[in-house]
Length: 274
Ligand code: PGA
Figure 1 (tube, helix red, strand yellow):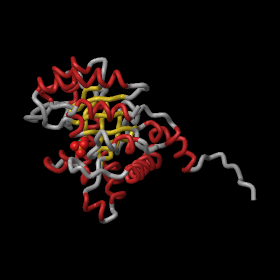
Figure 2 (cartoon, helix red, strand yellow):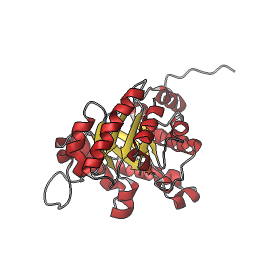
Figure 3 (tube, protein in one colour):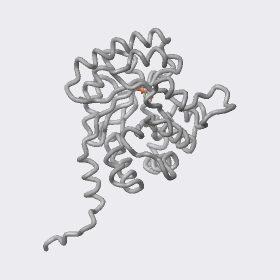
Figure 4 (cartoon, rainbow, N blue to C red):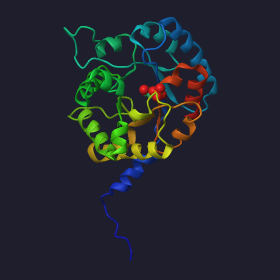
């Protein structure tokens, strides 16, 4: 029996289009609360040329550094990689002692900030709703928000992880006016059980969840967003496992913690994305 052509593309065709789209790979390091400013400067000074010399196709890369490093790092990274912060305030300005606004980050030369990292959720009680406000603040300043989502070990073992991720996506990305452009929003899938533990999701597990996330984007934000938004994998990525993880068709890059503090390891991870 002949297939009847339809004018409306089906969901799987839209998903195929989204998958066909050529997204520029992105590898970000997250230094967390490590290094003093001068050490950081030296690390970046050596990383930048090591990466540049090895690249044979375009890969975007960058480092999310402690706030105290921004001044020095802006000079080191200019013309090489993106500079980012690890968090930002959900408020625009005002009496919020200890907070740093998106406008301040932008004025310090930041290109992006992480939002909703599991360590912020775990140790500082941050919610996806708050992460959503931070994404807004960053986008208002023309910066890229890197929204981190991921399930705990318990949630993975109970088989509930798809619901957990959908809730995080729904709460963090709700509302009108959010930019879903590739330079305004990046998603990072970071299973909590894989962060800093040495346990990594298998390439199949990572790719399966990335496909779930892209499908969520497609159904809730449309084919353009699903095609544009880059989805990074994070959680114990190192120089040995990066190539396999990054080979997944739905994996657009990596968010790297511990290994981003080592020049050769981080450079190798960036290069494996090229
Ligand atoms: P890890 O950290 O690579 O050290 O597991 C990843 C992250 O927290 O972004």
